[in-house]
Each structure stands twice: as structure tokens, then as C-alpha cells.
Image (tube, rainbow, N blue to C red; front, side, top):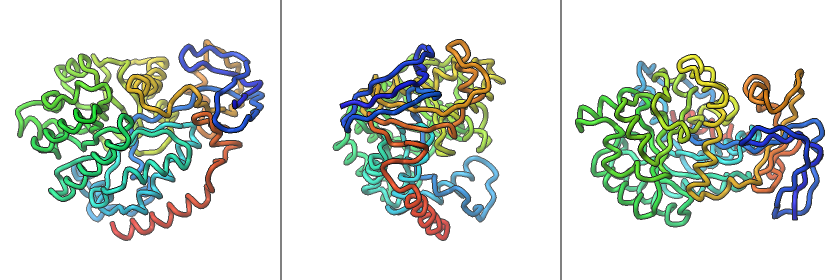
Length: 409
């Protein structure tokens, strides 16, 4: 069985060659024909660092105390929120996030979850939600000492249970160095090696991560993580990396690990500006950090900021957007194979060709142009609507659970 896309303008995601052609895509579903006349067809997108659990925060009440720095933002906003989550809120967040990803042409999500008081079973809930909406995913739940021994134990148990069932398609989640004791890192390192996986962890997002590490352990964050073998795995994802020293940049570039950058989140939290100076660019990926589910928007924000600060070009940012595919292939993670496509109904006022495609991609195209999305050979978005679920029901569920959550904050 196959899915045929006819009359489309196909953009090769690697070479950026633009040509009129028909595509035949392997599909486990019945034969289907899509007429893409006047539309752009290209490989779908993937998010290298998301927080689906943050979806219900949109429009939430202001914290009782106004944060004055990054640590207070975590304490008064995010740690307060994630400690209030229950399974129904987690399910609503995951389904809502998956819906928004799909409608933005994103068919694979690497998610970093946190629900310290509702850890048991949380990853399976998220996984089922993403499967329901047809999205590939790579999950973990963060471990941290900040909520006490009971929450940490529950987090380790949930991590191992999920790794046992889903390895190699699962990671070991960690919050950040400044909330992790040595004993916790030793246990995490052993679990990572047992299941031949990697860690997904926030690194040097704010200066507090470095200052606490230097004060307590007399070393920098990546030096500490190197000690526990986290940089030896090609599955390891470091998120943010805003405050890396020159030595840490050398350590990262000599390692197998990847780095996921979320420009808009850094701006929102006022933690600083990421620099790719002396970092292995082919292992820099892009994420959203839960700000939204729009990877085209993330790529544009990354370009506009780092073009100003580092004079990087459009191709460099486009390659960073696409490096996630190489990560998934290298680590044999299923769900992002060559039968994932997005069709844009993009009415360009000027000619589009291979030589100027990136100018259109960054300055013209928008996720609102997404018309059709194909994930693992299955049409999940058609005529801008999800084909597998009732969008209104999902949004109503999110609103209901959001109200429940806000009452607890």
C-alpha cells in the first residue's frame, strides 16, 4: 500500500533542490492520492527539546511572588506548577501539545517531562497521547533532589520501568546540576549504562548552574557530567548551554553528546544569549523548551538572534533545525523515518527556487501555511484539521484541566 502525492513542488530537505514531481510514500494504510497542485512538499519537522507538561501554563495566574531571577522563576512558577500535576492534567497537556505540534508540521517530539508528585505511569500516559495523535516521540522524566527522597525514588522507578519497556526509544531525564547530588548522579549513571541510553538534562541555562557547581564541587557543570560518563553517549542531550566556558566547549566538541538550543525561552527567562563559538555545529539542535510547538518559529528566532550576535547564516540555522534527524538515525530511534512529510499551502508573491528557498523558509513561510501532515506514512493533518481526533474535545479537555491546575497554584 502507498500514499501518492501528485503535482507538488518538492523541496529536498538535505540538498534544498526544488522540483515539480510526484512522490510515492510507503504506508501501512490503504492506498491514497493527494493532489498538491500549487503547494510545497518537504520533510516534516522535529523538536529536540520540549516540555509538554507546560501547556496548561498558558494564561495562568501570576505567581504570588514576583520572580527576581531565574532560580525564583523556577521556584515560584515551574516547580510550583509541576508539583501540582496529576495524571489527568498530564494527559491533557500531552494531547494538546501533540495536536499543536501536528498542526505546525512537527511529527516527532523529544520531550523532557516533570511531575514529581505524579511520576508513576506518567511517561506511558504521554506516550499513549502522542501515539493517539500519530506522533513519534522520545521521552524521559526528570530526576531531581529538590523535592525530597520520596519524589526522587518515584522518579527513578518510573524512569527504569519506562526504559525497560521502551529502550532504545527512551532517555534518562535529569533536571540540572544544581539540583542533583553526587549520589543521585552515580545512580543515574549506572542506570544510563544499564539500558545503554543517554541523559536529557539542562546544562548551564543560567549562571546559577555554574556558580553552584563551582562552589560545591570545584568544577564546571560539563566537567561534573563528564565525570559520570554522560558525555560518552551519543544519545545524551544537553539543553540550553548558555553559560559554557571555553574548556567546556572543548569537552562538548570532543564528546558524542548533542546540544538542544531554545532561543525564545532563554530570552523569556533573561538567562543570557547562547553562543555556538567553538562548539561542534553538527551536534547543535533546536527545541522550544515548552514555550510553544512551532519549530519554524524557533528556527526563525534562533537565526534573528544569532545572526546579530555571531553573524551566522540561514543555512547554518537550517542545518541545526535538521540535525535532530541525524540524532534519531544515529541512535536508531523509530518514528522519524523517510515517510514523514508536511505540505505547505504557501502563496508566495515571488518566485521560489533552489537558490532562494531559505529566504522563503525564514522570511515568508509560516506554520499557518501547513495544510497536510504525513507521519509514518499516515495522513494526520488534512485541510488543516487532524484526521484522528476531535480537536474541539482535546481543547475542551485542556481548558478543563487547566482550570483545575490554576486553582491549585
